Length: 103
Image (cartoon, rainbow, N blue to C red; front, side, top):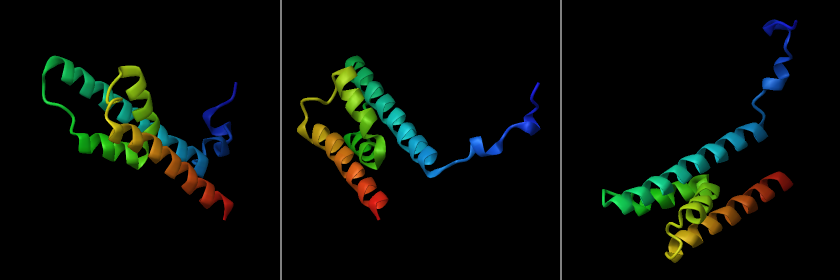
């Protein structure tokens, strides 16, 4: 039976790909949760998540969560600024990574 000491530590390395995946995955999960929370608060008439916060988390890298939140919760889909910020952020981040990786 293998012991903890015999495991290859290189399989646990934090490569740039793993770090980027954790970054975008974490921000997307947070943004998706914020969209869900804001939708629930809107339905119950309670204080909402600010639009600035939703835009900020989307632009920082939570665009996948924002797009998923808009689609799954049917939230902020009629506000053009939210649709543009989510899809625009996706395009900008993909373009930036393409430029970085091509250098």
